Amino acid sequence: MQNKLVEILAEHHGNICVVGDADQSIYRFRAADVRNILQFAQHHPDTTTVLLEENFRSTQTILDAANAVIDRNESRIPKNLFTQRGRGDKIRRYAGEDEYDEGRWVISELRRFRNDYDIEWREMAIFYRTNAQSRVLEEQCIRAGVPYRVISGLRFYDRKEVKDVLAYARLLVNPRDDVASRRVINEPRRGVGAVALTKLQSYATDHNISFSEAVRFSEEAGVAGKAGSGVRQFATLLDELRALSNDLPPGEMIQAIARDSGILDELLTDGSDEARSRIENLGELASAAAEYETMMDFLERLALSAESDQLDASAGAVSLMTMHVAKGLEFPAVVITGLEEGMFPHSRALVDQAELEEERRLCYVGITRAMRHLSLTHAWTRTMWGRRMDAITSRFWNEVPEELCEECSVVKPMRRNSFSDTDYGFEGRSSDFTAGRAFGAATPQEARGSGAEQLGLRSGDRIIHDRFGPGTVLSVAGEGDRTRAFVRFDEGQSEKQLVLSISPLKRL
Image 1 (tube, rainbow, N blue to C red):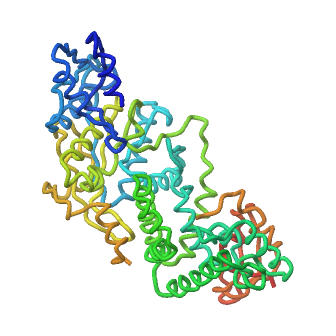
Image 2: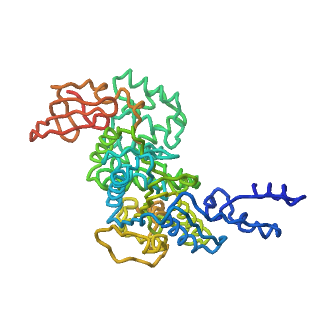
Image 3: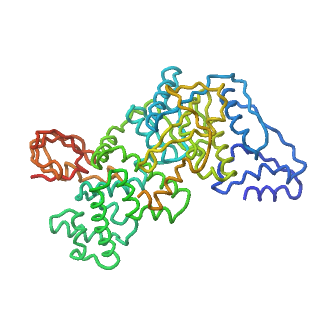
């Protein structure tokens, strides 16, 4: 559209001035066409081209890295960025054993920026290619007490598809979790509307049972027609998932929930870039769950981590964002993560030259956001859909001249320099899942009335837990969805900390 408007404006007098950087054209998925600027001089033979090559943001070392990467593209107008700001520090690079090791090093790098150079949190940024990658980085920030914010997006565990699948998981652990039941009884859509929900709640109140238990009595509650069928489908689904949960580990169980609930199919049918991003988030959720022995352990850790996520942002916060969001921004210190084939460049680009050149432009944009300090990271292995896989170092990593870099890895595995779309790739692995070969958490507002308020627990109360048996409450802390009880169980006199909103227990 913009190109057409330019053509119309220049049609009679030929007087037109356009400004653009073909090396920063990164929105092909939104129909942006880099050829509009590349072929402008061909369409307007009398064009005078002025290259603006002096950069006033970055050091020469950072610009040399950007120049080296983008120079590999064939479809571009040759130019070479330079600056009067001096060479600056070398680019620091770290290859982690896995994404967790990578994340820990990123945190140490942020602290180095702060301690050695007096750079404030708000002046630092972490970039990644896909939204799903933020999960590990967010967790590392929380554990380290580093304040952060996700730019132009939600934190990982606040994303709808993640909260929906976690709500199903909560119901498997605690069938009486009314908040979770209400969240997903019509997710995906089953024709269960507000009227049906009101009837189920009235039945639950009249018969002194939970809403989740009332789901089993939809006919008696007067829920008929399409809504009644939807409620029965929901109840049957929970029974089937509960049976699977006896045999599957948490990571595979998350996959089964996404598949059998219909959440995954709905996203696949959508097929948009946003839907693909949400599918990647589900894969990352499965990877997170795979780190735990039981679903209960996983959910309790999430609940306790949410309580820990109360960070002091008085000095600002580190910005976490995708490379696309970073365009137009600048930061004194930048860390670019996940430089692996199939991750960055994305797997879709490995078989499409035009896509690959766009990914390289995206890398160029990311590098040139850094003003003084730039760090690059990748992992040698990464968990995809709950399975640990080897990774291949990104070609973009290898295209940055070694003389510009300071290698920070303690152990340097042999560099792998062959690239193949069949070797590694997030989308390729997620396709295995969606083909069937591999195989939410409530908001504080939703959680009101749960936990200690609902059970009325106090120190000295007797309870019974579905797994641990009877016990005595020692103390209660927190509120709402984060309420915890410290319980001494009769068997073995073991003491445990339980998150009440997800724990299957009753007051005796």
